Length: 474
Image 1 (tube, helix red, strand yellow):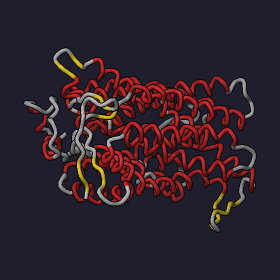
Image 2: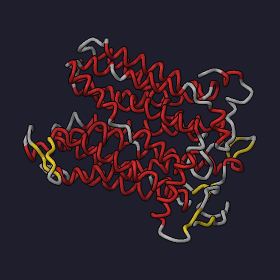
Image 3: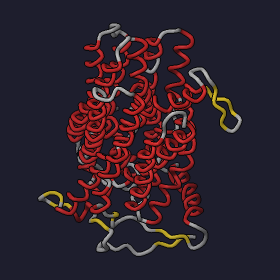
Image 4: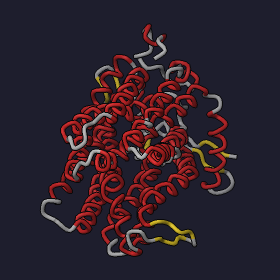
């Protein structure tokens, strides 16, 4: 059994609700401060995805493991033989499995306690300190590197669940696409700045291992430094449901609430349909972005400098893309813009198949196109989903949202690997990923946004009210 404690909108840790924090003249000064603090956490934390996962640790952890057992050697973890070159891939897969069970519990605890800021920043600082500790991974210390990578990945992703759950309290329905887009854009710029610093440092530091360690240390410091802003200014939503267990620990209450959330989700069929669509098309997005460097190197013969430059282009251009698609969503609705973005994704994957070998210019142009739709698709998916979930249970439902992206992270690479294994062609392998965008689009089209929003008991966005466009299948 649980009991509901009385909310107070005047406590030190509470921010004004959007219903009272915004008026005809726009958001109140306090609400603006809350939004800036929220943006700043994304600005600092996104460097984990760019510098740690995408660029440095994915290569450095493998190199450290190979230092221990040789390039073609085998590691032994709990008696299980693992090829050194596959260590990072297995680390990510293992972490994704753990997150499937961990994220809903974190979400339930965040909603039950109402202490979202403390939980987000506590997990965030654990992640940031873990990344900084990667400075000590050198030589053949693959065990330390593996532990730190797993711990940092778990804490970062769980903090992201709570971070996303702040969105409904920071923006009303009509502003949510815009605020989500600005949040994503800030993350891309913050992560891009750190990565650009590493790119400049690469011309001075010729020791690749030292460059990786310095870059990882810088990423952790950046994350921890900018987390100080929400630590000081971000407040817990005043409307957050605060539930405390009458018996048992908060952890066991979290497990009970997880079961309640799953049962409740069955009453939201359109929300579940969107989650399935998101699971499919986001796996395509994640696979394309993750394996683009591999495709550029092995299929197109591009240099490391060309690939790193392309990654930088994506980071900074995604800033503008997220804002641009956010503007489009204000006029035509998030679902319609996401659907057309998936059409563009299909075109990008098909175009990648026909790229000329050795052409850096073509690769840069495709990277620009990818960056425009990447940021916007992610930002609008988050804001659209936030309008389809019940108030007071945001963290719980966003844990299911993160499971949709993390839990299927192996499907795209698996298809890519099977296509390459059976054809010997990276071009065929990249083209095979079209299926994720086609199927995802097919599942997204029948999602009735108005029904999903009203079933969840939320305000219908202005882009749907009184507009004949909502009758369109897209």
